[in-house]
Length: 394
Image (tube, rainbow, N blue to C red; front, side, top):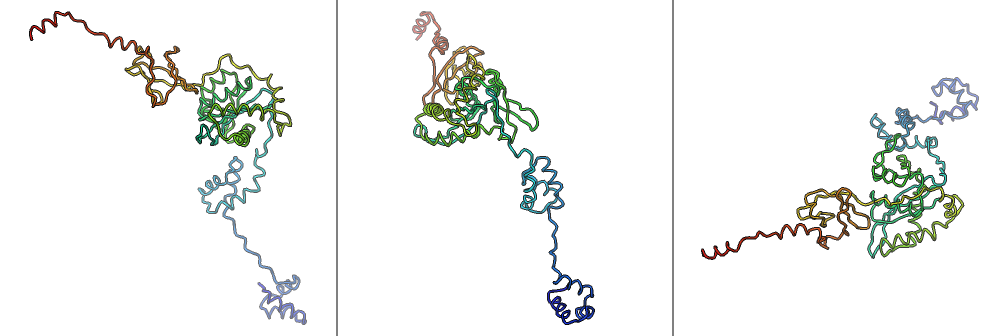
């Protein structure tokens, strides 16, 4: 290949009238090479060698995974590494980047529900001060889809019983029941939700749904945007209520302030998307809600216990009395969220106690043990002559 110096010689000799053939002999090249150089006006440019991409043999596999809905670059990297790919993730991401615009489902179409149709529920948590101590507050937010009116309740747990209690309190706050309740895939509501298949709901959550007359509905897995309205309200509560109120005297005080704040701040607000006052919009939704049941659903913890020989049962580290006739039998217990313990045999309520700290000692009712004391106090009677005979022998 001609160098820049070679071309300088060609151009100089050509200007002096030297024949192309003689210039070619001088440089040891073909005359046509000299002719092309003069026509081009420069030495030929070196073209950089194109290196084959390490990803090239695996692009078909990458495209296949993208079509199947796999867009996690690390997951794809592991797949093609198993087939022999030795490159890095950067080149893979560069290949995927222009294709992401074609990803199905990237755009979210806002879904508006008709009045009384749906309620969305979600949990949030943060640390705050209650009774002078730093504690973690779990709060459940329940929001009506049409009016965007919401209610929240703070407590110390996100388990099934507290989830059901929080939902019931919100229904009572709204004064009615929507047609369906949309939940996340938490185990207290959804036991299993396979992709593409129907959700399998928790039996007790189904019982709650039947009691209040709503249809349970679960979000699609990995589709958090389905419940985006309510998730935004979790952030709204954190950034407004828990910024305004930073310390509480008790859990009851927290929830009292919560409902006051809802009435004074949240309900009268102008909704940014709807451009309408939430309370006014709820006025149109309220008549579309179903009625509350005549009796409240019992959200108590439900367990069983074996009654000991002394007619006591063990509950959360302490002991509580039951009627003596139940010694050795199995009883059902219910512990409500307010701290009341109820003991049942079948459907019969046999005992009620307030749950006590272990340091407070055993909790007993004298009447429960009257039967045991009666059997203990029975004394065998003997004739006095027996004692007289014994004294005479001595």
